Image (cartoon, rainbow, N blue to C red; front, side, top):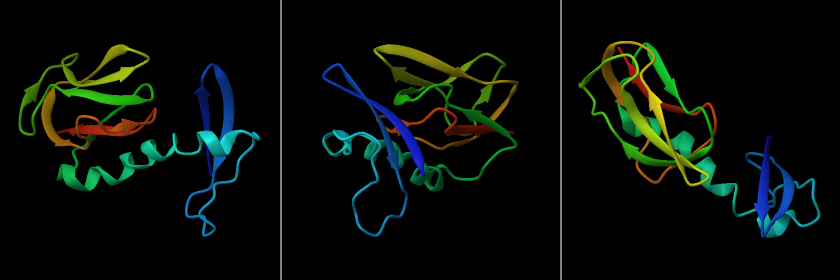
Length: 127
């Protein structure tokens, strides 16, 4: 199960979603959650993206906050230095650069522009 906090028209709802539920309806902790249920569906698309990224490297680059992939700054095979932006995530109208934690070569890009990602989601890898 995953927990989400969703804000709709200024109202905050805590929603619990069961993955793989056969009934098709997510379990909800708030009475108004069915109206907000379509919102968490977007982050579920993020785990499917890594298959398109190719081979994984030894150093993981993960999202620090939930948001949408705004821009991809590096390409597979490109050398990056510690602190270079690899992916830019947009969260709450802010562009947040996700940087390389060390020098290396980009081994995979595991997301695409427009993908919704959760905090801790794998964005890219380095060798």
